[in-house]
Length: 163
Image 1 (spheres, rainbow, N blue to C red):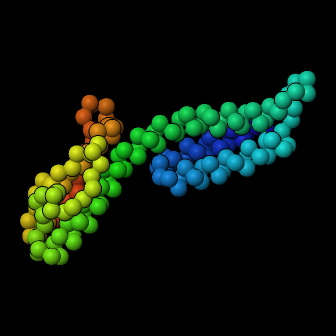
Image 2 (cartoon, one colour):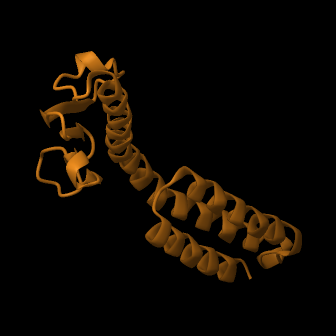
Image 3 (cartoon, helix red, strand yellow):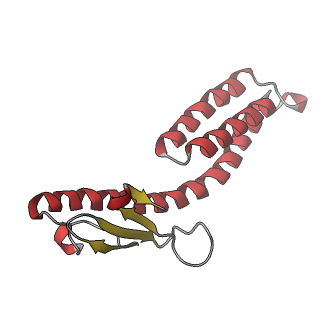
């Protein structure tokens, strides 16, 4: 029974991450989904050979560790990439506030008074009275393994966030 739990939850975990990504709420839901299987295996699992140990519980715990070993490194990597996107959203809000006062977008980050993570390189590429374009890249966000961080672009003329 423990083996079936592990196979089922491994498939559910893979599907959730594939379709929903590495959001914090997805990780919490996965943890909450694994918990009942752990409890069921502990309460109803059968004893191992010789009546010692609960093999179902051991299988579920092993499955949880294998799943965590696969998910956690990707989750932490994704957090770095998401930070760039979050900072660009903050920049867009600050640009909107700046525009409301000055009737033009700012060309410098200093005027926007943003707190920027030192690991993120952010710059405003262009800004005028109609639109602005900015980029952000976290030094640890690298999907294509080419040695340079992935750059995220915000283009207000085209509706916002671009990859």
